[in-house]
Image 1 (tube, rainbow, N blue to C red):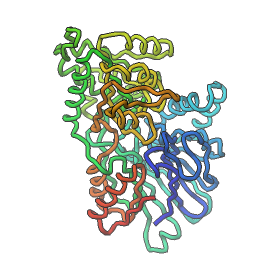
Image 2 (image 1 turned 120 degrees about the vertical axis):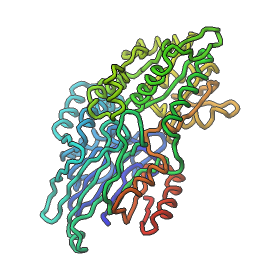
Image 3 (image 1 turned 135 degrees about the vertical axis):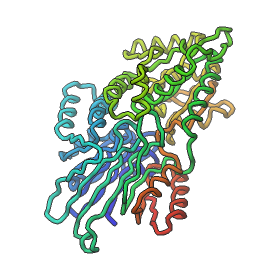
Image 4 (image 1 turned 90 degrees about the vertical axis):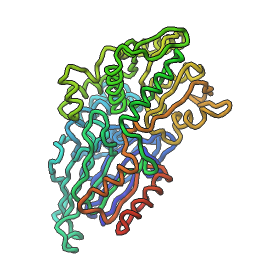
Length: 478
């Protein structure tokens, strides 16, 4: 088995970063993500200490599985540490990555335009976009080892991929093998996610690094979760309040728009419900507010990459529908309008739905909405994604139904009187059975599995199930 060091996503689900050692002189990084909440690398990096704390002298290439901030957020720091090798990713990810890095620099580093441009120019010079299922040789030093990589659809967000490394080195040859395949799952999507084709398992893996975010539970099926979303919104809107949906700017926001367009299309002039004020609103009259300039830019890119959508989404477009840009959507770009909208929703009695980042309420415009609206029982917070330990989102979920429940923002206590709901079926991550099937459906299954990107309980549960289904497999939890 090849040596793999895990520099992140070990103590939780953020900061993804894994280093595959091809030999003593060469390694490849998979992802270089930002830590969020209380999660750390274990060797000095956390959400406040972003500098690269490990030796990068042997790193010959970086492979980006997808562009979520917890997988790419420390990329500027990797460049600052002297990494000048190729950065491989899928073609859709290559379109999205500069937007993510630009935003990360503005939020966490600097708003100096010349510094941001220099970083983005450097990124562009090293970026190598790949087609799915294309084999690419990674340049190494020395003459003894060879490694190729291949990206396959992961179904998590647009452009997401799992990675196959085909390694040939002295150790592999000494065992009489032609090659050794190492697969990194990145973040796997659940089957039948909106917009995206479902991930297909690789033919083989000798060694597998797999996420375990939902290693201890399964998701609802898609039709059930859409019904739950509709029921949750109907119940919430009946109170004439605002439904706040914290969502990552890329992936989750577009999936929610896609599902909301379908709900509205199916119900058209049907009433959502009669509000407390006696007003009966139809679905097509509900304002859906996207308050995230970054989400708006991502949605534009998503639309331009419709060729990568799944067959269902393409059929909807062919029939004349606009799954990501329908008329009920109001997009807010500038900060002044954002503040005016928060103030307006604090006073108004007309129901509305707000989708804003960040998905774990650890920053972004959703924080201002929560500060203003959490204290009003007419309002609802609807979580549709995982909430990491140490984030305000986790605290809201944990304490909302406790006597005098509250959450802290910027050192100030905010009482929670709004209703709080969670629909786990809208997670972009594979559920327990999906993760097990990813292994089960390989024709040649791994002899060693590394479990990463999950809480301790999720990893322990998944470890036990893999060992039970594949007793010949060694399962390690870094």
